[in-house]
Image 1 (cartoon, rainbow, N blue to C red):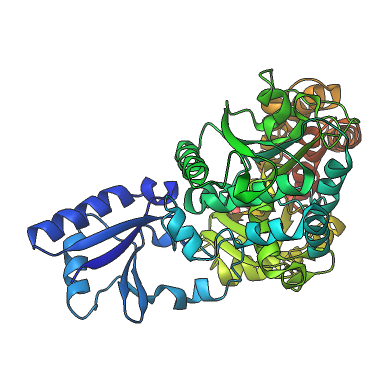
Image 2: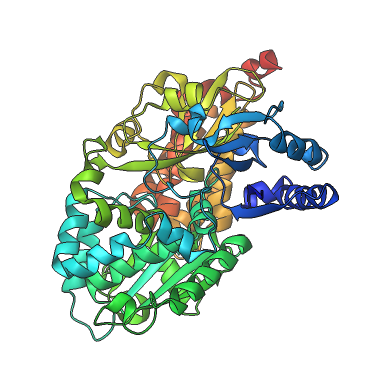
Length: 518
């Protein structure tokens, strides 16, 4: 009898020893003459339990974690005996943290071998493309529009409208571009899906190509994601060999092929027009709009630009139908959102759920509060440009409009938790400094306003004319919000103004609250 084990190859798991654990299990099995098969998967997203090892049983896959190299031999012994072990978590699908989720996009992540096209198809892969080919472009566009899917990269723009605009544009060539330049603090969903289910992204982009009439696609991945680059390149090669990419894609009348491009790490290249500039071989600088990329995008041609998670949601929509997707969520926020819990939190990881869960539920119940054990004081949602929410706003539903109504933004779904030792004046200063460092320099409000913001916050912290300088910061924020060319300068005011509004006591010399917290 051969033991079948599943060990993640996700970068997050590898960082805490997954490769070494897999090797230790192989060596322990060889020493004991135990036949084993190790399948390297993506991560299930329970990062506080990584490396999490699973083994196949007649009842399902049983999970253990976090596993160490030293503990691998004993774990193998337990698997060959009755399965009793201190790290036993039970059936993976029954782990409460997983069972509570609604996994539409991440259904296969951590389950299949991401390098195996056969695994992907065996778990429902390419059913969406098959249906898309039978429907034709107009019906695909109608399905995506009816699903209510909005851009998961931060802006929340309706995906169907963007695709329809490109489809209606007249041009001899059109492009599909996947924005995988995931640079927000506390976010890792794009990386997880590319490493754990790369064919899903390829299928979503292929469906988009059929819908709008594109023949070429690019996946723009940040250089800090070498594992994702490797996984996507391997999947593209496999899809091309199987006829899902290249000439007559999936038996379609038009060809479609994909290529990975690696960015140099500029945060501003997460903005779609800067990304296009970089793809074309130039410095990543924001373009003025109009024209929109949907009309004049990559190489001057109509271009669909969507985030990884947006493309990854499309196969479910086409497989199960628009209504099945739209039945989840609330208001204008339909479907599910892969929420990433990070920072000072007990249970950090990826939690996919329908829109509508409250911020308090995510932090206190699902995340388990702070890892330090101290009270939660602030939560930043939406990356380094997201607002800081105090506990008083923890009743806010995770929904685009609900967050906007409270001067916040969902962004890419990252949540970073801070306990009561955080200095919010330092956090506000960091936002301005981050903007100053990462600014492409094209527009004055972003380039100069962020630098003056750092200087002025420093004056406030030193106690220099605090009231007057607070007014200067607020004026700078209004100028940046209304006058910047892109979201880098336009959204930097969110963390700064929220810190000033909700944590005003931190802005001044030697805050007494921090001394008491120490």
